[in-house]
Length: 312
Picture 1 (cartoon, rainbow, N blue to C red):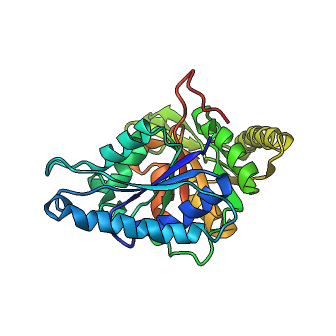
Picture 2: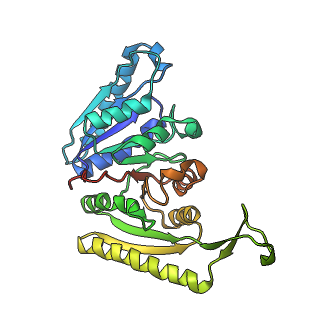
Picture 3: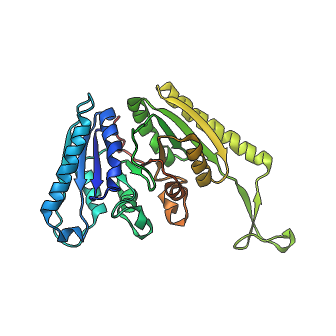
């Protein structure tokens, strides 16, 4: 499932913060590791030799690190030639990932084209929206770790089938990394929505009244959520995964951020589609809030199309 990993680099130190994670993943998973350099329009004006020297230098450095491990990792690099000043790094990364049948992309959200320009269509944003394979993002504010740990994984589930797309990947990763998984489900505060009438005494928005669920109704929702998350937990446990679960109540984005800060997982896993996926990205979605608020690496998984399930 995770046999080939690529790391896009843009010559910045910020983009290189992904390298320690890629090295650790490649060693633990026995995966092939490919370092790739993708230029920008400004880069195209520079001498090609400069970029070749850069990727060769980084590759040599990574090779020295990998030699410290007993595991044998196949390492290579790619320098994508830019035919014109019209350069689309995200498209190049996505095309390369698909043509090379890449299983995982590991990249920083900040770099020369990273999340500092997220709202304007940054490279990381475009890749996250369109790439088919899982994407492991090292987020803004992260510092280069003295030691990369992948032992504790926080997995967010929203109860939807698309949201469960992460589960086959999590089972595979947890076993191969010997990690412990904590499943997190947030019960959102719910409301009954009624058309507004003057006799009701107060206004809602857009001609409706929002009446909060009663305590009994919220408890019923929590009971349903607990049964769901326990069933998922038990299924993973029966397949040899070290698991636990946690239920929180409130705003999903805020509660996930709180859980991340309190539990300090080594990385967080979310599906890109579901109640918390990219469909609501521009409107302050859950995924958007989680990505921008924390510093923990984030693994985004896109649900497979029917009939295109990845082999484990």
